[in-house]
Amino acid sequence: MTEQTFARAVPAERQAALAALVLRVSMGALFLAHGGIKLLVFTPAGTAGFFESIGVPGALAWPVILAELAGGLALILGFQTRLVALAFVPLMLGTIYTPHGAAGFLFSNPGGGWEFPAFWTVALVVQALLGDGALALDRRVGR
Image (tube, rainbow, N blue to C red; front, side):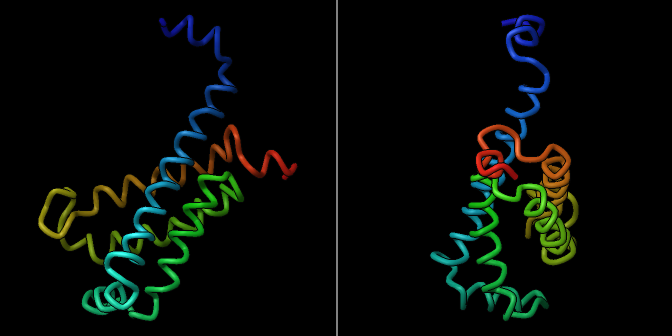
């Protein structure tokens, strides 16, 4: 299918709604995965210990885990998408500062650089600008 054929078959407004859906669901799945690994693999106590080892209060482990799980699910469902995306921005900026900032830019560097969290931050801002997109819960309940 050529670009012109696609543009005629799928109007630009629908393309943007589908793009927002793909972005929203993929970021939601990533946040669920990160929250899940902190909860089930690293454990909350292990996550708290890691946080403390990098100078972040260990008491933030549970709030971060819950935010990643609840926020990830909210993004997947399309519930308060703009708010959730913007709420994650400070979290991602925090990961750039600690622990990834000292590792340099490239995420392949030892300790993982800040390239991936920076890109994720930009994607969250784009999601906030795009809104829910297609198949969002908020559209179903009339928000």
